[in-house]
Length: 79
Image 1 (cartoon, helix red, strand yellow):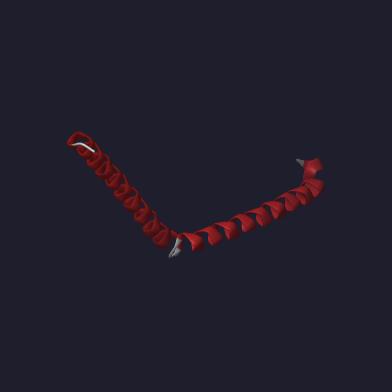
Image 2 (cartoon, rainbow, N blue to C red; image 1 turned 90 degrees about the vertical axis):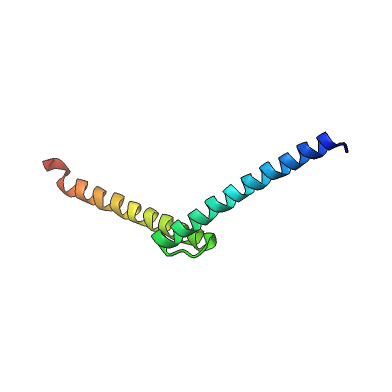
């Protein structure tokens, strides 16, 4: 390896380190956001919360549709 190759390699390593540092900073911001907004101390708990919220959404949507059908059957002729 000559001096030019070494300098290019060093610059590449430094650029990758800066990119990794930015990614780590972004990840830390998301962790703080999850904790502040949803009281989730880590990503795994956030995933579990998201799954639970999606389940609740499906249940509420099914109930809404059932209630809407009942309403339309009862009052549809008057609308």
